[in-house]
Length: 500
Image (cartoon, rainbow, N blue to C red; front, side, top):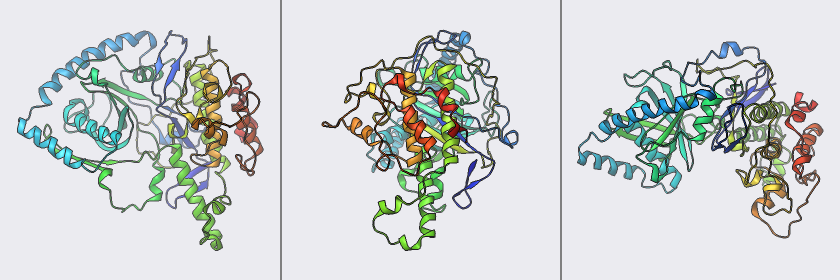
């Protein structure tokens, strides 16, 4: 198997592996043992490492949280307790939040506007405003030392830090525990009122508990809400794959640093803004960059070649052992969702897969590595139906407006198709998808769209001739035009190529 070596920025072969985590996607649940039926808006999964040699030294059991003993039958009780807890938080926050003179509050507002004056992206501005508000206003965040903004989108922002804040102890997480905190925006009409727990948080609390817990699921620690946001605390996951592309002493751009004063705590906060560099896209960029540099060092005659595509066509593809390690874990995670949690992902793409190399020593003593439980398989009573898929470039034919394929929009089969596209991308490089999917996504007229058989992918045009035959077979099997002709994930997991 393979690992990433941060010393020289290269890949090496040893007995370690990658951990993989699927993130931020809409989900649909079907009939679960608890009768849970919801629309899901986001999901985080992490795959276990292979039966690796040193996993016991890297990981220890997780801290106990209110979710650890949660079960589907106790979900309503948890929601009731959360309601009372949120009421107390509201009262405390309203007493502390604006406990500054009006002129001081206006000065803060002016300072914030000046710091953001050169920024134009709406999501960036919204994220910076939300982080300032949360840290200044939410006493419950005082239990954490927040140090970085990991990423953001239209619906929320994710920050990272460690437990152990300013003279405040977390009720059940030990000091030093590394966490990610997702701040989910409330809609304008919901600001100032207590809202039902979002499905994203509800399903995570259930999937963090028995009997739905699994080694492929990220552990959720805590959740609450205040007048503007919902908060979800989870374990921190992912390696910074883009760190090798920039010098450690490179200057920090103004938009990559958020500095602001907190009058409630009488201190200044300074947070780095990360480019979201733990996902599969970043992994692919780092791998391609290093492979290209290595190839040019070995072939100095090409260093002055002006045709970039000519050079890239000769650069070796992603190491098949890396592909198997990452893709196999993603498939195992989705398979568990389908068969045990009765859930479909709904937006499987490279931006929603986080990758972490466990060859790097784990800095979080509470990062949890659960051993594989006895295999459990529960057949779906019915397949979840989707009306759309999260991203156009991975949307299967039956959900594409540009095609004439008319078939039930089975969410399980839609996930299989998207995983097949993900394997194509993982092999060929970040952002790469079959040409016909680009045409579908763009709604191009005049393009011939097949109604059955395999997804058109010509060797030499779409499929690189160097891709191993077994890998090509899996890609073709998972991306069949008709849902009923696509492989099952059981077939994928048992394929000889994936087993290495």
